[in-house]
Length: 221
Image 1 (tube, rainbow, N blue to C red):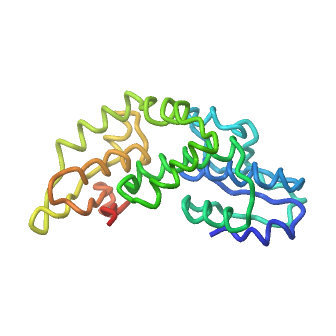
Image 2: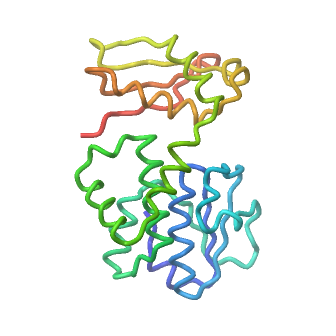
C-alpha cells in the first residue's frame, strides 16, 4: 500500500508500474503533480496501446532517473488507494477519477470485483466525480485482440475440473502463445472466465511445458 506521507516528504518520486497497475500509477502521478513535486513513470515492459486514453501514457520511461529520492512499486490495490486518498482529504479530479475507474476494470478482469458491494459503491462515486466511463469501457473492454480469442479457443478446449468440480485447471504453453500471438496476461484474463462455470470457485492456470502454476484466481466473497 502506498504511504502518502512518504510522498509529501519527498522531492522526486518514481512510480514503478506495468500493464496491470498502469491505471493506478496514473492516479498517483496526477496526485503528485497537485503537490507540485517532480514525478517519473517507469516501466520495464511496453505499456499497451489500450491505455493511451489515460493522461500520462506518453510519460512512461524505462530508466530510473538518478535524481529521485523515493521509488514506489505500484500494487493493484485500487480500493485501498482510493480510501487512503479520501482519508487524506485529497480532492479527486476528473483525470484521477477516470484512472481509478479504469483500474477497477483491470482489477475486475483479473480478480472479479464487481460482486463486491463496497467497490460498486466506489464506482458510483467515481462517476459522480467525472470519471469518463464510456472511454474506459471502450478502451479496456472493447479492444480485445484477435490473438486473445485464438488462445481462448485452445485453452477452453483443454481444461479439467477437480475437487468435485469446484476447481478448474487450465493450461497454456509457449507453443500456444506463439501460434496465437497472445500473451501471459491474455491467458490470465481467459482463465478468469472459467469462474463463471457453476460451482467453480478457483481457477489454476498452469504453464504446461514448464509444469508450474502461473496464477491461482479465486472467486471473491
